[in-house]
Image 1 (tube, each protein chain N blue to C red):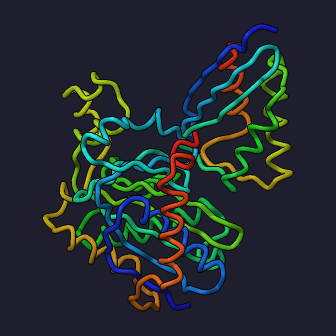
Image 2: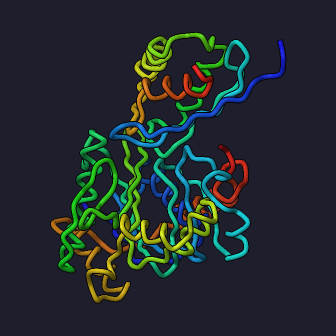
Amino acid sequence: MGAALKGFAKFKVPGGKLVEVKLKYNESIESIQILGDFFLYPEDALNDIEKSLLDLNIGESEDKIAKLVDELAKRKSITMIGITPSAIAKAIKMAVGK
Amino acid sequence: MKWRVMKLEVHDAYLNMSIDQAIMESVEAGKSAPTIRFYKWMPSAVSIGRFQSMQEEVDIEKCKELGVSYIRRATGGGAVYHSNSGEITYSVIAPVSIISKDIRESYRIICGWVIDGLSKLGINADFAPINDIVVDGKKISGNAQTRSKEIILQHGTILYNLDIKTMFAVLRVSEEKISDKLIKSAEDRVTCVKNYADISLEGLYERLLEGFTAGKEFEINSCTEGEMKRANALAKSVYSSDSWNFDR
């Protein structure tokens, strides 16, 4: 396994806010930060979302990643405003260039 | 339901954000009445949203050079330049049950109080979801909310006058972005009370006070001793710390 690659993506969610993803990865995600001017309640839950994405294979489909985030959001009663599970998934795929 | 209304105060960035949190905790514990407070920032400051990166959003060196503080808010949303003489900030801290469980609706309700205040100056402002207030399509107020299960804390800024040059100097934008062309572009997107009403900052505060308190039973009061003690502790341990401000 070589040194981790760095990925970055940023885009404005249509009708929403800016979402930005910074990550390190090889075949899977080794570290990830989700940033932006969105709202997410409770705020600490963003850490849970980030943790749930660690070790995710970067080949996973955008739909699968969105579903994973959506399920976590439902399980932990997370409310997102200006950002969506799909937007997070899209930013991740953009950041790894796929 | 009797509200506590706190007159326009001036604090530094750390204490301003800490007072909001201390009041939120106190209202949640049933020790304080729902609260509306108004405040300014001395020194001027940049606040960034909970999920933003300080390094990406703020030119730290420029802030140090100009004596501008920088702080991460507990609320989401974007980076804001709080000029000491150019804006008024408000906070509303209240049980969810008396505002709205629905987050978008609660923004609309509280932003409505800002709009009512501006209307008393003859300014016709509109709520622009998710969290902005606009006049003639230009932003005059940005608002942000955090909430626990039971309590809402919404704070927001009402622009009194614009110092776009300083705003662009402290918010991280490249040199070319502070060219005249782009400053003009910002002026096309942002406006302020001074562009519409010949009124002092104090006068704006009085009208906002009317807008926020209309139809409410309230008393003018200040923070309790307990709230101030907690706020001072939070300012020291959290809001002025690098671990909080540079968390992302």
